[in-house]
Image (cartoon, rainbow, N blue to C red; front, side):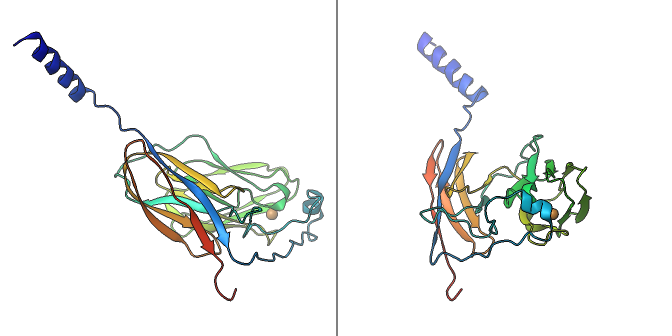
Length: 238
Ligand SMILES: [Cu+2]
């Protein structure tokens, strides 16, 4: 065996022993709304003067929030199907749901099963956090003004359930408990990115609390980034 074959053989052995990790892929895009802009009624916070003092501007419900060019905020995007079976690591870093100004922020969010969810009350008034999941345990926790923080976890993956405040009827948020980290929510620019994906064929779902959900199949090669935009239509006659 000459030196060439010896070198080649050891090179191949090295590749087999240490395969290159597949380069992560990504999906990104923009979500917009098409149709007449909805007229939202301002929230009346008069029942709790403390809530009123937190705002100088009129507050509108966070149902359909549009940017200047109909960019749609609070659309939840997730890989719905196609991921390899795996126990994805659960982040120790908590997700945060804030009640500042008697409004939940974010209004739509995800958290992984087992990941801590920190719920904050910086308002100096009573909130009552009432989570209404079906697969996970329901909870109903009073947060008087001195109770500024609680932490909760959800054990099981569960799609969108509501969190309400029993003191302030306008307070509403939606939470999804995920089994994997490939999800996100659009910001005020309507944009999103889901990255660090292994190559594969995925069903990507976009969900909005008031508009019909949409699914798209996306095939990603190694290290590939694909742009997938969504347009949500206003339902006829509404
Ligand atoms: Cu409240």
